[in-house]
Each structure stands twice: as C-alpha cells, then as structure tokens.
Image (cartoon, rainbow, N blue to C red; front, side, top):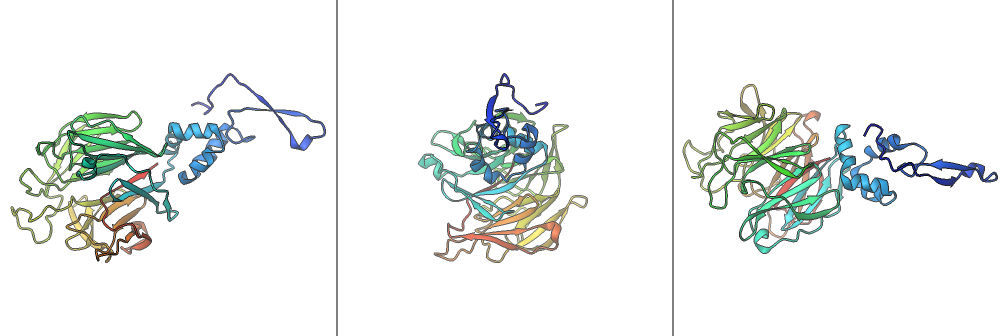
Length: 382
C-alpha cells in the first residue's frame, strides 16, 4: 500500500462540526479513516503500537480496524516495523490451551477447546507457533493430522497436512515461516525429511533432506539458520552431532559433537528409558539448554562448539526425564514452565530470566492451580 489507503470510490459523509453548531457548517470526513481527523497513516501508526491483547476490544469499535486484524494485514505491518509481542502458549490439560503475556504479566483468555477425536487426544503431539498461527500435530485413527489455531479469529480448524506426515520431529519458526525436520512416520521409520511451512500462504514446501535421519530431536533458529540438536536413531542410540540448515544455500551441514550425552551415559549405551528431546532456547542468537539430569542451565559457545554451565533450573520445576517441563525463549527472556510433582498440588509456575540483565536468577512471574505437567508449549511472536 503506497499510502495505506484502500480506495472505495471516494464516498463521503457529512458530520456536524461541534465547534460551529450555530452555523451548522458541515465537514467532509473520509469513511476509510480509522481514527477521525488524524488520517489513515497516523491511525495505523497508533494501532501498530497498541498491545495485541487489546485488539479484540478495539476491533469492536471500528469495522475497518476489524478488517485489518482479521485479514492479518495489521500483523504484517507490525512485523515490517519490528513490533513483536511474544506470548507463551501451553497445554496442561488435554485439548485445552492457555496463553500468558510475560511482559505485562497477565493471563490471556483461555483458547477455545479443540474439537478432536479420542484417538487424537491420547496420541503423541507436537506444537509449533508460526506467524499468527498455533499448529498442533497429532494422530487420528488412520492418519496424522494438524489442528490450526488462528490468533486472528480465535478459532481452531483442521490444517493442511505435511507432505510427509510424521511425529517426534524437530521444529522451529522465525517470523511467518516454520521448519520441521526428522521424526518418524506411521510405520516407525526414522526420517531425514524436512519441510518449510509458510503461514501467510498456508503451504508446506519440501526442503532438502538432512544428512542423518533422526527422531526425538529439537530445532531452533539462530543467526538466521535452522539448527537440529540431539535425537536418536531407529534403535534409540543418541546422537551427539547436530545439523544446521542454511536457507540461502539450501544446504545441510553436520556439526560433530554439538550436543553432549546425558550425565552418566556411556558411549554406545542405550538409554534405559526414553528421554525428552533437548530443552533449548535462543536469545539474541545465543543458544541455551536446560539439562534435566543435573538441573543445570548451559550456554553454547559457537566458536568452541562446547557448553558451559551458567546456572541452575528453578528448584520447584520438576520433570520426568525431561517430560512435563517447558523451557522456551520468549522474546528477550528464557522461560521455564513446570511445578512440583507432589500428589494433589497441580500448580503450574512460570519462571523468567533475562540473560542481558545478569547471571541466572529466576523470577516467578505467575502461578496457577491448573496442573503442573506441561504436555505442549510454543511461543507466538506477532
């Protein structure tokens, strides 16, 4: 939009000027104006800087603004202007999702309940937030499916399936795109297949295969590239190597010894029980990991290809071999979602640490008696 104005034949309407009521003079007002008297561009600039948690209420006041938000146009303008709010979405009850705004420290209204089959409810699920969408991957009786939540309309629907349906894959997103890689198909075959999802066009685009098939791995974006960390092969042998995908050259590169073995695990030893994929988060292009076996927070040195312990997880954030604990990058902060496992507590605690503000020191942002085992978690920035 050159001027940001949608042309409608230049219709006008007459509005009384309250300052000249005696003379009953008329002014011409453009009905395309979002906020009267300041113009379209100034109106947009004002709306861009409002919190997205207030958009629902503001939309009820103006049909033009309602169109801007429902079409996604306003969020595209926010992204171009570098205005992004990060909310953390999570599920501690099957089919129910909630969201939290860590900057304003407030709970967002509970998302509508997903309408899915019993098979999907109890299937393994992955989640990924891309643009203004939350994707939840699972399985129905005969196939893998994707449920898509739209922040624009606050509704769930069946999403477009991947070209190669799978589970237990790695994923990550940046802006309006997301990448999934690895995992296993419905027969249990471990995959090296990768795909890119474009949330603005709603399409899955095949990418070159990884060098090494793997499942139970984690993915993050760092320095504009997509990294795969950890995972296991078809016999549950863990990988210490990682891989990185360059979006410009469309190539994968193996990174030897990128991810250390869990504490106490010897070379070649099979894991005694299936552990959760690596708990990773990237802040300002720096990679962090939460090690559930030692309760340590580690930072990755890209030049030395090594990890350094810099602090510890919150004491009350428990897990079952890494399951039930969420560790995510959310804007400028790292967040831990979890709680004590004592019987009958069911309290979820949300902790935050901003690396740029100093050594690891967790701040308890909020707690809620809704259950303490986190099934899925994703961060939406828009």
